[in-house]
Image 1 (cartoon, rainbow, N blue to C red):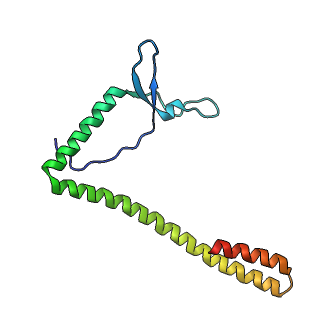
Image 2 (tube, rainbow, N blue to C red):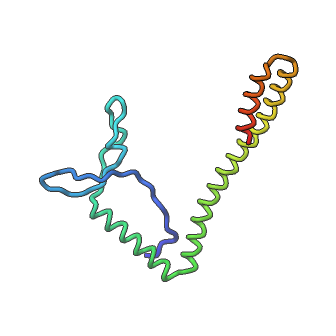
Image 3 (cartoon, one colour):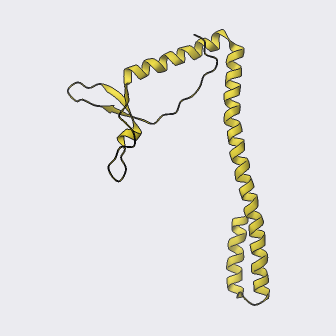
Length: 141
């Protein structure tokens, strides 16, 4: 079976050995293992034996390697698409952060103008004005 494209699944699991008499390593849902302040479970109990998970991971690795060997162009396209998806998410996040920073810089310009006017009008002491100005300028830089 040749996959159309590979994908990543992110899960939160915890390694556990449930029975000390017959120790079988497994992974249990981390949300099940944690409780809230009322000692209630956040999830139902579900787990997977470590050997089963290892076999699934090995199978997926073999499928991915087989895909890369039999269809280099298709594999390259999948890698490129997945890389672009992550890059696009990063760009979107950084663009949003940049916009917020630009708005804050503009706000700080307005604030600095106002405290300067308050200082000129005698509403702020020289010392207080200097502290506020240096604080706002430090944030702005």
